[in-house]
Structure formats: C-alpha cells, structure tokens
Length: 119
Length: 110
Image 1 (cartoon, rainbow over the protein chains, first blue to last red):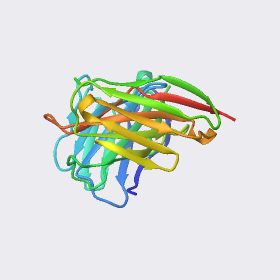
Image 2 (image 1 turned 90 degrees about the vertical axis):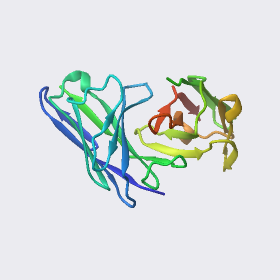
Image 3 (image 1 turned 60 degrees about the vertical axis):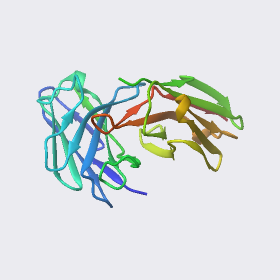
Image 4 (image 1 turned 90 degrees about the horizontal axis):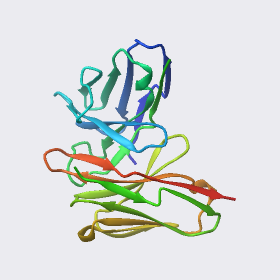
C-alpha cells in the first residue's frame, strides 16, 4: 500500500519556539494532503487541507498564522507551529489520498504522527 | 456540519470473544473508511466501504448508506486487536475532506 512518512516522530521544545513537521508521500504523488490534530483520548480533528502550489484551506477555528502550511512539491507538505505554547502540545498526523488527486474514490493513508510537547 | 458518532465508546473483551462496533452519521456521505489506531498512534486502514459488505480475515464491515450507519465486526478477538477504532466519512460538498467519528476504545484481555 501507499506509504506516508512524517518527521520528526517526537519533538520537545520550549515555549516560543517554532516547530516544523514534514509529511512525505514516499511512493506516490499527492496534490492534496491533510493535517490533523489529536489530543489525548480524543478523535482526530482536521486542521487544514494542503494543496500543492496553492494556499492551504484551514478549518474553522484554526489560526492560519499559527499553523503555517507549505505544500511545495507533489511529495512534501510541511506544517510549522509558529511560536509554540504548551496548549499546542498534541499529536499531529498527516494523510494523503492514495492516488494523490483527491477524487471521491480515494483511500486515505496516514503518516505515523508527530508528538509535540511544548514546555 | 455532519456528526459522526461511534458506539460503544469503550469496550473490554476477553480474548476469543466477538464484537460489533457501530458508526452513525447524520448526513449523506460519499465514502466511509474504518481505521485501527494502534497504541503508538499509527492509523491502519481496515476497510474502504462506501456501501455493502467486505471481509478481511477476522474482520468484516457493512455500510448501509441509505440508513446512515456502518458496522465493524471483530470475531475471535486477540490482544493485538486492542486500540482505538475510528470510522471516517468523506464529504465533498464545497470541499473534499474526511470527518472522523468519536472512536471506540477496545481492550482485549488475555
């Protein structure tokens, strides 16, 4: 099946630091990728849709100046948490449709996630 | 927006038991997937099932789109089945995105 990787898998940083998380589709191209956030014992909440070559689409309530998304190539999307604070501590997961284009028949494949702890 | 509710929220089984997990959604959807999130957080695709029934080993799933629900059956459960099970529905009105259900946390005891 399709493989999606994330880096880093875990990061601990001080409050005020900016943190970049990478999401890569390893064996397929993805014009669309999705970023989710998951708090302990909760479900996944969609944060934003990352579109290659254009601006990301953010869900209601997600600060676009706080969570900066760049989808610079067909295999890489990055999420930067700007000036992270303890309340940003969470599990961040990316996904991509299997054939990359985002059509109705797509199956989503997920990265292994990044655990962010802001002290 | 669409609501996706799963039941039960928590389930404890003895190894070898069978179980049924349910996913209800409040509006028409284009697709539905079932996932298993292992203790390390990795989401694993189980079924892509917009309608009908599929089986894969000890797992099977049924989606009745007209009645807005899907069921995941686990037979002869094993300790490795422990984790959280999510359904996620695809909506395409306006934008294309998956909305996750509330999840069922399963613990299988040896």
